[in-house]
Length: 136
Image (cartoon, rainbow, N blue to C red; front, top):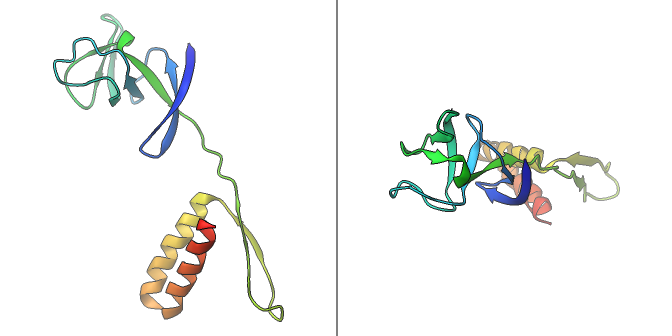
């Protein structure tokens, strides 16, 4: 098994690995042979079935088989989400709180505030403040 470089596909980072794919995995076509217009180099496809007898795979996107030598496997890389530190900017007479959120949690919070904003006028202000902090 040889590990190659990385690629980002639909927001997810993957490492390219030269090995036989398993069902459900994503592959990147690198050496198109007999595609007949079904796929081309650079396509990302999902494995439906592995045929060990003929050393090929079938994918969910079309009916043409791909030989193992035509692709590399895309293995997802867990993306560490560094916490975002939020510090209240209220006047000194009020309490100040420090909250640490991951990028994913921050996104969920902003989405929740979008719903809150539609019901409560100050919800839009809170949402805008959190989005500004996220972008900083």
